[in-house]
Image (cartoon, rainbow, N blue to C red):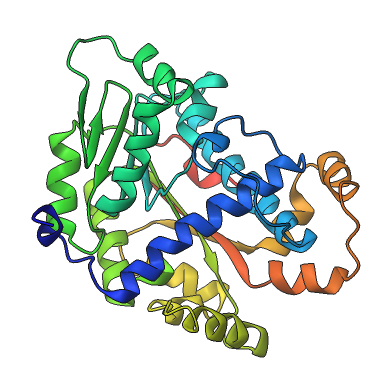
Length: 325
């Protein structure tokens, strides 16, 4: 308990937010078991495939994973991997292992999440050789640091921190060799929506102030003021999960405004239905054959209530504002 008091993440709302990490991992585990995309590492974080998920949920996760990966990989190629990545609220995400397998590793890959989530992830890494071996392979020195709430190697770093405490976050990242001079990609998936608008603006502003050449990819809800959006909010509230940042999720413009008002130069946003139509259509046709979807309108409604918003700053003139779908 002593360590817990260092953090402000002990209330019920934060517990509910932490539970969303399990939801996402379980959904991804099921979708990969059905063949929507390949992820040989997720099984080490969620052992069983679990209950059947509806086809529209599986297609929604497919769009999310492919959409985010498209922009992330484009950034890595544009910078020739001479960059760093910070996954904010990473949960049990497996991107580090995918990038290593695909020879798309940045100079360093950082993950930040609540200390309790980080502790679970580190425990899994320590006890599962298929997870730990790639980290050791990318580490050249003897000093691989591993404790309950942090892992630090040459190329991969996991940090337990509260994203609402910017000074502590900044201090911890710099302690683990974050380099503000390197092109930096920041990623958040269904994270900012659980923070108050002032907390998320502070985080986005910190990123704009800290890195002169950067890209921020944010995936979360949008169009939340209609009836479908209200039902989503009510369903989450029943689980004690409050969307504290829903104000920024009203429209694509409100999503973009958060970045434009905090020092980012160029911002784009698309709802996930649009992204779905822009993904490689031969692969979309393949996944649509995996399961019969009775109600196409339901998928459309669901995807219209999520978006990817991406913002760039480009002092090094790398052409980051050209990155798109």
